[in-house]
Length: 179
Image (cartoon, rainbow, N blue to C red; front, top):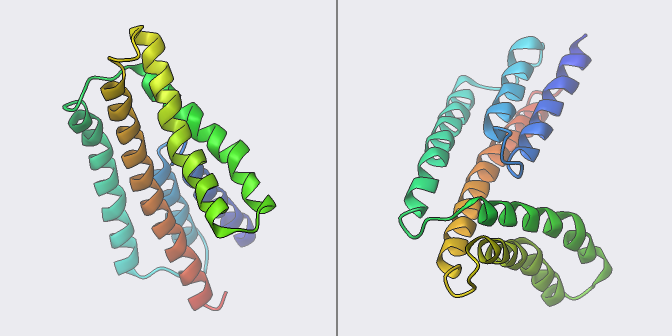
């Protein structure tokens, strides 16, 4: 039964990682739930109290900042749902279509160019197109698309860093406990 709990906790961690990119899933909270499940429902007991407290504080801080970042970026410009969805669709296209192209090139400069194109330029471009369609003006849609892109980028990077820290702590603890 312990293997089932471990597999379920890693599935929660993977779901939490995906929640960094999917807007409606609370990624860090699901990842932390996976850590708690692994720590308290198995005999592994791989996490120290300090690492659990640090992960919990990181999750709470991430959730608070995730609440306030859109309000701060709205001070730059008010953006709409079209810009937000443009960022989400652009990043999904960047991850699913452009990211696998890295394996087909040898040069580091082309790999960096592909990463920048897929994860930065494409979401901004689709946010700009979405805001341009919604506002019916290419000239007036630059600032709202920049605000939507910065909100999405800051929120995604913040959630991603917390989830990766929690997952790293889980794997490090599993290796240290001689599981």
